[in-house]
Image (cartoon, rainbow, N blue to C red; front, side):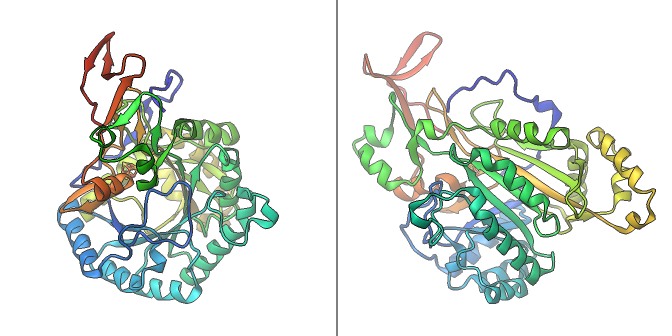
Amino acid sequence: MGFYNTENWPEKSRYYRWPWSNNDNPVGWLEITDLCNLHCKGCYRKAMEGHRDIETLKSEVDFFIRVRNIDTVCIAGGEPLIYPRIVELVKYIADRGVKPNIITNTQALTKELLKELYKAGLFGLTCHFDMLQERPGLNKNDKKITELDLMPLRQKVADLVYEVGKGKIYTTFNTTVYHENFKYIPDIVKWARKNPHKVQGLDFITYRGIPIKEGVIFDVEEAGEVTREDLKKDLGYVEDASQIDITSVDVYNLLKDHFGDKYEPCAYLGGTGHIMDYKWWGQALLMEKNGKVYGSIGPRTMEFLQIIHHWFKRRYFMYLRKSTVSRFLILFTALIGDRQLKSTRRRLLLTLLNPVKWFQPLYSQSIGINQPPDMMENGMASMCESCPDACVWEGNLVSSCRLDEYRKYGRLMNAIVYNKDTDKRGVEIEGTTKEEIGAETK
Ligand code: SF4
């Protein structure tokens, strides 16, 4: 948390900054229920409303199409698969020409339901697994499970989705990253590499929340509207500051240490509060079906693909329908100046000495790293630039990670930094104190 030492962080100029904005963004985030059949430590949602009305949800889809130029609707919650009219909703979104992608813990996923969803036009499933979810039946004899214990379950889900969709359901696996499971990240990547035809992407989301910290209070507390205990009860994302300090660069460094130069991101979104933040960081590995990795696509290829997609479809993309690519096409990336793929092209040329390989496509597998909002030392919050996971709230778009503040207090909370010795409220700026000024969190 706070202003990190960013001296050795990778330079931003090495990557493409995704060109998304509020009104031209590939994603709309649809919150369909706040009920769930699991409890995840990193969840942002408290149960307040239950299942939402389907006609309201359809009108939110229309709103996204009208004002945001979306390519995908991420159907989220709560747990979307327990929403009684999920199939009807998926069909509605697909019929409107947008890709429906469900974010699920998979507890309620059955073959029959998946077949129905696929028939209705389901584009993708984002499956959330992490070892702090406490899935029923997995914590045997009070022994805490690890990410390794979850691998058979990940595999079972990947197999099921592949069986139903034959590779046409875009499947990604998300993991919230805590201190407890940080060291298992390379194991999850290794597992995904064994399944390039079944797993199109991974996403590592560093655990974040509003920090309970000496010297920071919130204006709702100040106004006497809530106590700190209420705050903890009202919001799922109030947390001890020491628990929420893993950065996206920590994850990046871990991946680099384990996998070397073949792993390199191509694009990012920065933070609104800190110029060095990597809030969203994307890489796409190119590999054989047996998991042999050749390299990662570079910023020029990502830029080219976004522009071409926007030129022909009038929208940017987050997910492409096709996750295989001809190795001859990769050779053409030299023409658009993708230097990151230079050694990959050399390795691929050698494979072409074997004519059998000419007809074997390469698989692309993305690895996203996300670092949700940070509350910084000065009381400001650093949110994701052009927040892709924005949802509808009272006719406007708000960041879904902090939706519960709107639902509970009608607005975002502001942090107020104070000096506990002098009890002065304000923000220290160059040795002076601006008294009684609350720093806005957004
Ligand atoms: S700011 Fe937006 S994109 Fe970032 S974590 Fe929050 S909802 Fe997701």
